[in-house]
Length: 302
Image (cartoon, rainbow, N blue to C red; front, side, top):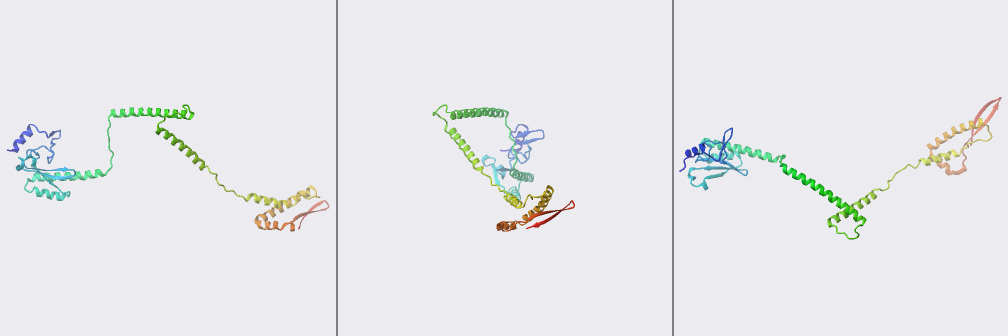
C-alpha cells in the first residue's frame, strides 16, 4: 500500500536522484514536476493524485495520475492532447480537473501560460537569421595550418615539375617517346587553344578606324588663288613710286573682289564656265606732273 507522507520523508531527508541543490534553492529535475521546485505539494513521487503538462514536438499534453492506477506502472499516467488555442486549452483543463484541488489547477494553468509564451518566442527566433558561434579546439587549428603548409609546398613542386616537362617537350629532349597523364595533356592542349583564340580575337578587334575629314578648305584656297592670278601683278613703264602706289591700289581692289567671290561662289563658277568671252576688270593708273607736284588718278577700264 502506497503512503505519500512516508515517501516524502524518505525522499526529502535521505536521498532523491532528481534533487538539485544550488545557492538559490532546491530544485527538481523530474520531467513531471509542475513548478520545478522540490517541495511537498509539487513532488510527483510523493503525491498519488497528481497532474502536469508536457511538451512533445510543439504539442502540449495534459498528464493525470490517480491512486487507482498505482498498481499498474504501465498505465499510471493518463494523457490528454490540448488544443493549440490557449482559451480552448484552458477549457479542457477545467473540464478534466473539475474536482481536483484548486491549488493544483492554478499551477497547471500557470505552466500552460509559460509554455505557450515560450513556444511563441521560439517561433519568432526561428524566423530570424542569427550568427552561430562555433568553437574549434587548438589542436584542430594547428593541424589544419600544418596541412595547408604541406599542400602549398606540394602545389609549388607540382607546378615546377609541370613547367619543366613542358619546356622539355617543346625542346624535344626525349624525342617522340612520351608517357604523359591524359588529364594533364588535355589541360595543356586546352591552354594552347585558348591562347590561339585570344590572339585571333585581338587581331579581329584591331580593325581600321573610319575618320571623316573636311574636304572644302583646299578647294576654296585653290579657287582664291585662281582669282588672284587673273589680276596684273606688275605694271611696266612706271617708276618705283608709281609701282608701289599701283600695288597698294591693286591690293585694295583684290580684297574687294575676294569678298565678293566668297559671298557668291555660284556667280564666279558661272563666269568661269562662260570662258574668255568676258574680260576681267583691270586697274589703270595715270600719272600727271604739274610744276613738280605729283597727282595720281585712278581709272577702271573694262
